[in-house]
Amino acid sequence: MRKSIIIKKLGLFTVLTALSFVFILACGKMGNVDQGRVIEFDKEKGTVTIIRDMKADPKNPDYTHLPPFTYEMPMNPNEIGPLPKVGKRMKLDTQKNQIVIFDTATQNFKTIDYTVIDQKENIAKDDPLVFDKATEKSKTFPVIDKENKTITIYSKRQKILVTFSLPEEYFALPDDTWNSGDEVRIYYKEEGKARRFMNISQTDIFKK
Image 1 (cartoon, one colour):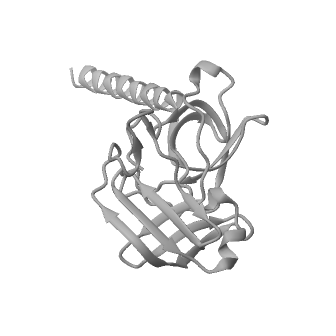
Image 2 (tube, one colour; image 1 turned 135 degrees about the vertical axis):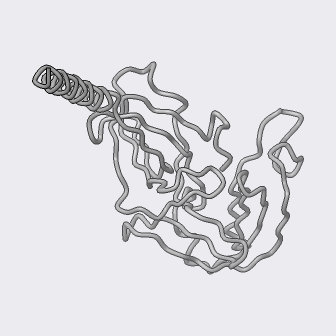
């Protein structure tokens, strides 16, 4: 009787162990999800480079993870959402009057102090200051005025429209330096090869 109980217990243990193993394998087959801000996109090569978001919190993203990571875009075009807008702006800190960019030359982040010219808060995405109701399209930002050495940025996530001035040296940088690249979510099974590409900025899930 006791031997029969032991055998049954061992049998149950074996079954549970087998089921756990199958579960682990199934989870592995489901793949992984990555998320970040796009700093480079090469349509011809089919690659996208992101700064990973270590929090994945739409209201408080954390773009501080280096080095940047490059994915091959999905082979199946049906698994690709809207193509991403590229940008090097990682953070706009209106409390400290600083902007953090990804510097391509050094492959590192750079914090730049700016002087505020004008700042408006609580600007919704359909506000006339940032949205053209006649064409029903958002106005284009940033606005870079090289003659007056000013840049105007609108952050949809922060609901802030700010114009600031910078030293002349910074106006030699590419215009996309001041853009916030689209936030994207990538599903993959093999490291560096996207199976599904979702642009969550342009589908309005993420408020940048």
